[in-house]
Structure formats: structure tokens, C-alpha cells
Image 1 (cartoon, rainbow, N blue to C red):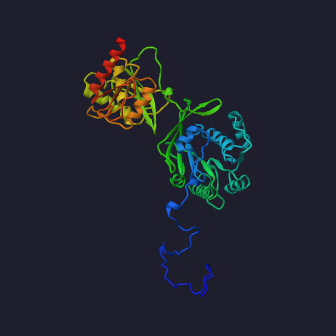
Image 2: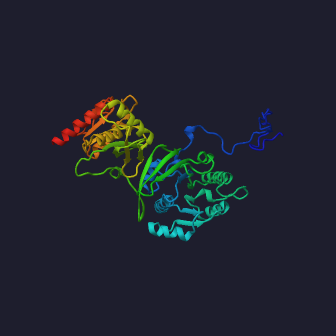
Length: 447
């Protein structure tokens, strides 16, 4: 060929040898890319800027809002409030983003969704509803509505044409998700997929589902509590360990920008068996109360019952208390421990508060209401350092706590100063922690 078909120049074609690699025994030929690779500094990041949804706590977890073209997977147990939250998000998007929002339900009729929207006050001209189970029909709705946000409730109820298997099966879920990811990227549609969970709380379906999407969120909450948590598990656009707090009520669901008060009990007088700690949920410090009740002596194996705490860590703390302090005999007594407000504490920083609550109940010595305890307990009775102590102390001081027991090395020098009006006491082991707590209780009683 003498003339180049691209630039129309004569004699510009140069003969070259193209390698043809083999993949699974087949020859893979070279192709011209649809868009050439460019230096990273020349690529604009403006199309990937997050757009706020109007729901502050969800924006906190997402890293500022929804990115156009991003695909978010929101998973949670049945009845926890996933559909309620997303309907509110769709209404806020339709009212503030300037582009329509499309909610496609594969589990409910449009009339059922409309009833919930009336209860939430989520009626807007740019909020569209559809009830479908076929992916091809969903794409038809996208062509007609041209939304900026798409919500599919839930991804396990949709079927892709030409794909074998029943809706919710591994093959169908993979095909539907892959197609939606491709469409979202191509059209710049912020897409939220509702996902089911298994009995052990994992996202139902193939593991590749979590790899395909950009963000994975878990919606958690106890049906007997109004508190709901949206926990980030994967986030390509922000921190993956952030937590958003919500409250369920008769009018729907609302954000809780300051949820610490839900996890505390206000007593008229100090009560034995309680101690306050500060837990980190993502980057958020939550002041939380730990309660313990020491039962009577029993024959045989006594019960160790927990609610909102790790049973294995409670057993370890009880063993260390009995072995290292010589003041408590707990091996033949029942122990019940719980948190307040339905929150679940799993990080080791709650060990010291758990130990002081048990010791307070066993010795019938009430902790002062202005004391907060932070630290991990080791098997030798030592108090180990934990992270973000400065942020924890600042949150405790904001809520009126004045005495803090912290691990060695977490005092004013390590935390860049102590909040005004707070006394920080470094304790190296459980024995010194109990002595410091008893002294603080005596000082509070003398006042």
C-alpha cells in the first residue's frame, strides 16, 4: 500500500513485525486504542469530582458525595432501612443536583414505593419510579429519563437477557453488575445497587461483585434500636473506614451528626458497674458507656454474657483481672456486660473501660461520672497504647468529662496538649488504673 489511509500521505508506510501473544492457546492481535494514553498531568479530574447527595452522613462516608459514573453497593439485612434511606437520597438528589433521579425496584410495585415516598415527603417532579426485573428494560428507562442518579433495589432481582441462570444466581448477578458498571462509566450516571446479605452478614453473590463496584457500604442496625450505621468497606474515592450515623423514626430516617449522647446514660448519682470509654468508628470518636453486672456465685461453669461487646475479649479481661489484681474472684461468678444505645465495640481500646466496669461492679465502687478510660489490656495486665488518643480526649472533654485514664506515652506530650479542664492520668497496668479510678472516685465524693 503506497498511500496511508489515515494521513493520506504517499510513501509514509513502514514495514514492521507485530508480535502476536498467545492467550489460552489463541492468538491475540494488536488493536488501535479508542483513546491514546496521555501523561497523567494532562488528564482533568473535574469529571470525577463528588456531587453532594444532600444527606450529610452519607456524604461523610462516601468522601463528599457521589461521583458521576461511580457504582455504589449498599448491603444490609432485610428491614434495616436500605430502601428508606435511598429514597430520601434520590429525593435530595432530584431537588439539588439539577438532574433527574431514577429508582427502579425489582421487589415492590411503584404504588408501594409511592406510599413510602409520601410518608418521607420524597415527592419531586424529577424523581422517577419504575418497577422492572429485566435489565434491557432498565436501559430503556435510562434512555428515556436520562438520569444523573440510578438506584436499583435490589441487584439480586434483575436478570440480564441472554445470560443463563435465575435472578440472584452467581452468573446473573455478575452479568447484571458488569453491564451496569459499563453503562454508568459510559454515561456518567451515579449508580447505587442495593445488595442482599447472607446469614453471617456477608454480601450475597459472587465475591467479584465487590471487586466490580467502586464503593461497598454496609448498612447496620438492630431492629430494637433506632440507631443505624452506614459503614464503609471499600471506597475508591475516599476513606474506606468511615462511618455515618442515622436515626430511624416514624417520619423515615435522618442523619445524626452528633450521636455520642445516644450511648450514655445520665444518672442522678454514680452507680457501680459502669465506665465510659471513647471508641473510634472510622475517623469519628464516639463516647460510649460500658456496663457490667456481677452475679452471685454458682456451681459449675458460670455464664459470660455480652451485648455489643466481644465475648472473647471479656473472658480475657476477666482472667487478667483475677490473676493480676488479687482483689476480685470471678471464676465462679456470672458476669454480664453490655454497651448502651445498641452500638457494638470491637476495638481493643475498650478493654480498660470493660475492666473498670467489672471491677466497679465486683467491688461495689462507683466510678466518678466525669471519668473516661481508654486503653488495651494485655495478658500481663499492662495497658497498651491505642491510636487517635488526642481526638478521643477532645470528644470526651467536649461532653464534659474531666478525668481520663490513658496508656503510658499518651499524655500531653504525645497528644499535642490536653483539652482545657481535663486531667490526663497515664496508667501502666490494671492495678494502677484501679488505684487511680478509686482516688478519682474519692475526690469526686469529697466534693
